[in-house]
Image (tube, rainbow, N blue to C red):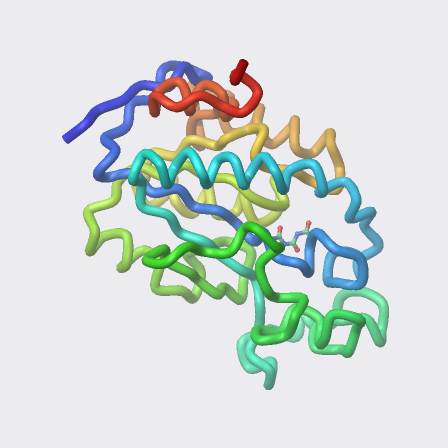
Length: 230
Ligand code: TIU
């Protein structure tokens, strides 16, 4: 077992590589591109564009280190049987979940909008989870999948920080996973919410988990980031 340490907040994050999974949350077109679910809620989706290459670099580092990788997407069945009315009834009529949009039906599995952002697709052998909620553990088999593989530590990234990323961190923390939020590989439509969420996670001695930038994780993994290359 290889034990590594990341220079993290609120204190050093130790993780055994064989028991650690990178979980990339909802890097799908519906949140990042115009005409999808995020835009339908009135958000400026351009806010999320800078995180795409950073998540790509994180994925490359995790793959190089041989970590388990999990990808999630938030999407519903085409008959909306897994979408509660409380969720369906939000937003502008005609631009709600299941309504037609420029990337197909909004937030529906199998439609172009629910697909991964180009360049962030799972590689062969990586696990893909479709989730109907904000947290990745709600109504998915993720906990069982991680347990079967002996995973105890999660590196978490993706969008949006205060919604699906934070929900997943809290669900995971309550289930006993030791979680590190890769703080520059997550983004929100509201930059202040990203910053606040990072602080919420590490406050009170790490009430939800740890946080560190990608460069710190790369140092621990023994890989050099593209920004460090000469
Ligand atoms: N609206 C928003 O910020 N996020 C979501 O609805 N889902 C995720 O965060 N993936």
